[in-house]
Image 1 (cartoon, helix red, strand yellow):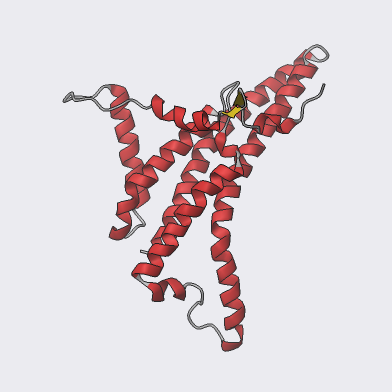
Image 2 (cartoon, one colour):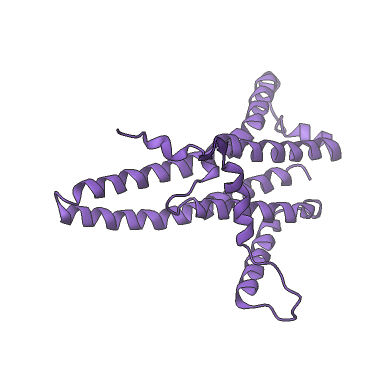
Length: 227
């Protein structure tokens, strides 16, 4: 029986109960907790340095009002990186390949940035829908276009993360299947395919980290327009 390539993206179940909640919550247990010691160990020091550098880099384009979101953005970044990286391990499940989960993250955060803009400075927030100096006949068309582009933002956030991870996992499975089939027929070609699979795995590790960073970075840019 030939299985579909997309079966790997089905949420695993145990006794009829979906295990996606476990896949989402379990990565948090992997982070070392801070200790009461004066001097941290190397792992805690490296983790603190990474979080500090990322937070500093993320807050550079933001105004002072956007710095309140630092904890949320950093936590979201670590969450996405962890579940993306764990999804590359064998016999695991990647929750971020589900569009429903990514949209559940993107829509509320995007909506929060829009509400903040309308609450603090409604004139500037609505002014983004109409560029300055627009000719009179083009005003209705531009307002419609900018409104559509505004509502497409959360969809673009969710689809970008889902599509990149799904495409990478599918390509890895196709190449791994090809290497398995070619091994008894053409060992040399199978070996070259395995090397290609190894390089693709390294690329997917980079994609898992980059896509998490891009997701949070775009949210910070949306926030910058409204604070």
